Length: 233
Image (cartoon, helix red, strand yellow):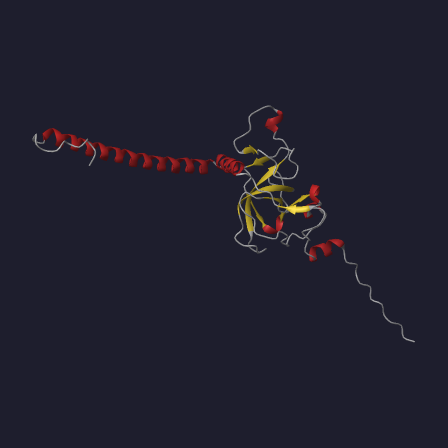
């Protein structure tokens, strides 16, 4: 009687399964909070837009003062495509950890902006935008919010225009050459607009002076019509 040879196969790890199987977008927990998740899978259903807020994972190997961990981020520039190969966003991270200036009762630096409202479901929690940390992330690192008050519903909040403009101003304050460039460009446009106003004013004054001079030097004609008011022509 021949004995069948038994071949023992290595057990497949949960980590390997998670790496080979795309992470589901409707899991009860954010995949960034899981022990292992597929960082090569796109789980957001559509292209992000500016002002929208997503949970974003930092790149592996990041360390402070770099952006680390898993935090909300405000999209500044949407991705060109939804491809995992070249789809990427530019964002500014948000944090609910109070800046050290708050504890020291000092004014916040110009690149740290407190939002008027928490974009997430926890409206009672204050958040700040750290505008000197402008970063790029693959769309594979983005995840939507989970609102446990609405049965784990996934959603994407959007900042108010006022908060978004405050963040853009904070970014310009953090990057001094950018701030200088913007101020110079605005100054040039203001100077050009002012020059146009002055030119138009001088043209009108010259026109009125010509009319007045013409009236003063014109021969008198008692039988003619009454002169029209200055500037009526």
